[in-house]
Length: 50
Image 1: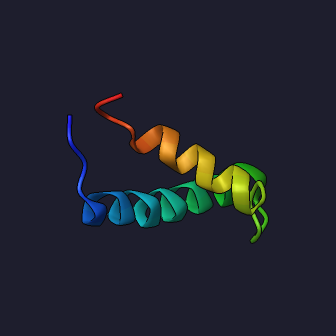
Image 2: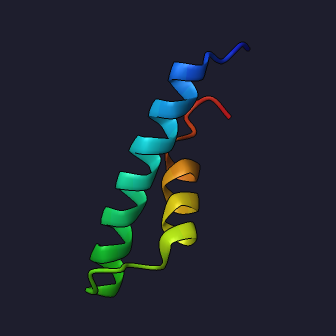
């Protein structure tokens, strides 16, 4: 499987947004689970072809 740079950038942005939203929903705080944990959660959730 070959990834293009644009796909990776979109994956990072969407993952960060989704992780931030999930962190806010779970913790009821604006910061969520933390910057890097939010990103990790979003990327793991967005990895549909892994």
